[in-house]
Image (cartoon, rainbow, N blue to C red; front, side, top):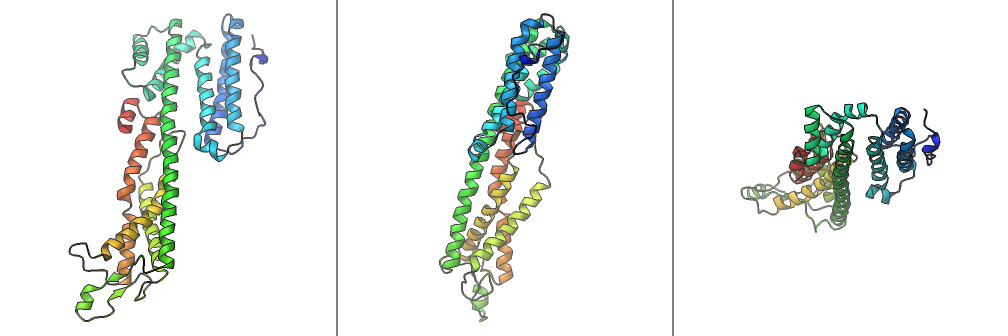
Length: 346
């Protein structure tokens, strides 16, 4: 018996066109269609399907809401809070849990390994629900009575997933705030150095050459003998070049995990202002004479090379950010078991 289509409410905003295209929107749309088709088929072949129509209506409501989130317009506030992404996936996951309540018994038992795999991805190994399901799966005597258990494991796993992805989103927003603040500070330093060159001197002190009677006594990044308006901006540019080289080097070893949010772009954005900051501070430290055994920067190329080296050296600072990002992504990824992911995210 085919399911009466009135069991599924009309899809909200079903225009056939996804706004603000994104991979997650495609996944939500595809998964919604899959759940809808599987539910209709299950309700058609289940005995006493008339008693399960209310479940089908609930699943249809969740899928309509998920598609509404996926197809709706998304502003900056919703992007930062993850309102659309979390709203869509929360409804898709709820519909999935409800779908397991209407699947035929044979098919339900056949999907038990899939449920256990999802549980292992997000739940600790000693979770009693997951342990019970795995024991039943190992014994090979799954039946209709295990339906609530599977739904409980799925519900708990999806809740844990939402918490982990929430941490990734919060860290992404924190990084964005750090990029903005550090960029403003760096721009302020560069502006001050460009307007008042003597305030932030980037010129090298040729102490050894001066002692030997060779002039000039100092040389600046732009090649002048006195601080110029372009010294700090040039050092900042060279520092960004060093940071870009460091970013290119990390990209060759970067492996992106499957999560709802990506941190790679924000991580790389942070390296640019960090490279400028380390270049300016590094040259100030070298020119201060406080480094034992260092006699000064004797030429313009030497200054620029050191500026690029300090820009590349921002990795010393940002690597802690990269490590934290890797830990959070591991905990939120379904490809990493929860015991390993939670250990790395601690």
